[in-house]
Length: 345
Image (cartoon, rainbow, N blue to C red; front, side, top):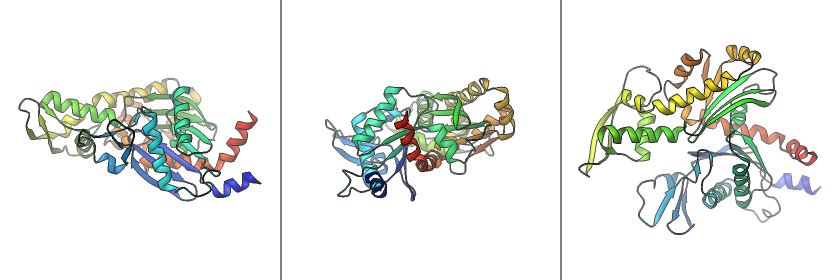
């Protein structure tokens, strides 16, 4: 009786706790929050001043008494206390505390990279519980992404997903509702791409640019493969030699050259996973191909490059940024089953 009452008042929540962005899915409401995974705190303390979009605007422009940082690195928790504060902020934003919240805590499904350790999993669970969650379920990001984009993961046939976020590139071949083969590349996500752009501009032009400028360059003129007309854009930063602000123009060919390393790692991750594939699953993939999801999968020409390198059909998800969060929402319908299974085991 009490269990039924709890399910009536509690809120089931799914979280794509990403390195770059956090998405929150609430049962029966869909995705209700999309915010950058950034927290601004008072220097020398853990007092949170801003979270999400407001905190991201502070990156690189804060005074000495404010520190704006990303508490998630490569898909895992780098700062436990700040991650806990971030989850609590997002949780309160989508499901404000009620008088009965002490007894009816929300159940939570959190997507985590497929390659994380048991210690890293425990850190995610602890952070969520300390932030106010009740029962916490973890699901691997590639599985959540595959479910979110609508792949037939339960069928006795191979489906392949490549989920590229801010911190990691997750590749998985799925059959019968399980991951048969997977590969997690921690230096092949959007953050690594941004860093490569920053390093290239510094090395070639002696110009220091910030994370936001590097991300803007990647989004506006970045590509993994020549597609359409080449572009150029004006960028601004600080000249290392003169120590003064400077403006210059960079081309899309240069950006493509700067992104070679992380793009090559994505291709290698896909090929390495395919190398392990059983002949029967490989035959399925010839027809089904692979699906790209995650915010960084939107890099222009990446689908064409992977198609050329693998000789497989490559499809970009309709809403790649939402795939993992949508997958956690589907999994919510099985929470009661998962809970019973855990108790039985």
